[in-house]
Amino acid sequence: MSFSEINLSEVYVAPISFMMVSAWLVTITLRRVTNRFGLSRRVWHPALFVLAVYVIALSSMVLVLGK
Image (cartoon, one colour):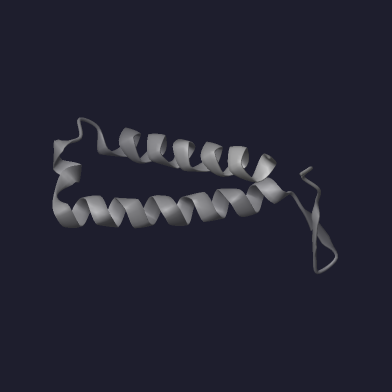
């Protein structure tokens, strides 16, 4: 599969932008789960952990959708 621009009301949008939004939604969900079970207290630097989870989610989406 090759990535191509998406026409959204006469504006061409890169497909990575949709993947970024969906990765952020996954990250928010995972962050709420970790907060609910108290796992976020065991992380050394919570903001850095959230960034790492976001990067992992985004790169996984790009790898899966790119094949």
